Image 1 (spheres, helix red, strand yellow):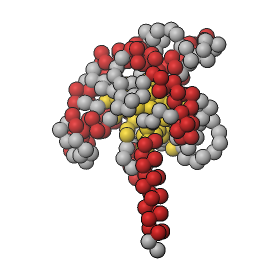
Image 2 (cartoon, helix red, strand yellow):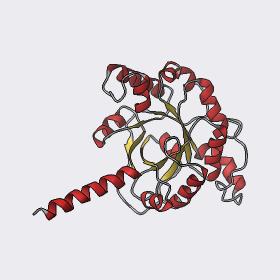
Image 3 (cartoon, helix red, strand yellow):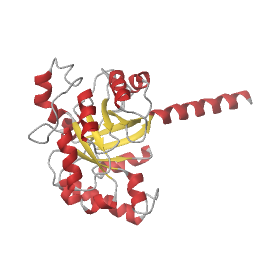
Image 4 (cartoon, one colour):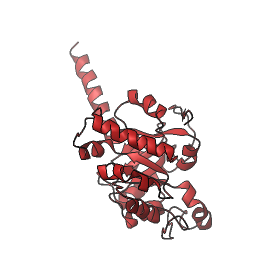
Length: 270
């Protein structure tokens, strides 16, 4: 695989291309941050901090339909695209997120070809899938209906999470399903499924990840990973990962507050 173009993390005041599929096809490396707070002001601010996309966590954070709608309004006009991780592989949840105008959806716990096909059916219009036609907010409240429907399959991203032993064992069949746009490794769940939770240097975990990387690259499926530190980013990109998530709204809030309070107390002791 050729070298991947890592984009600048600068804070230039310009709108980034929200078509993540196109950027992945151009071999770009995309960085994302996690969103778990539902205040649109938080998202409005973070959407202009140099990240390619915001990954809104509807699986583990309390971010449902109403919260996602507010988050999307907050992110409107910002640099970052918005990807919503649904709580489960549900047609109604996937369709809801896309109809609200999310730039993509991430679906957890894809363990079989049938799981992958169900996600594709929910996320893509025919002939790729069976998505119901009613792109409410996505089509600017039906004002751009024809334009949106004609290009939705190309401009919305479907990312499938590979995070179980079953998924690794069934990966050839999963990758044979047409219509999804990227695979994404969930390291915490994958390590837990392997019985080596958090041991990301354990041989069993390393072997599973290498298997996923090898097969995704061979199938030309863009691949993502949730990393724990900046030091790992270049190595992951060089191995072929194009979607890298690092940092979260709540982490930024806590780290900033802790850092400043420590500085204040240190200054008061002088």
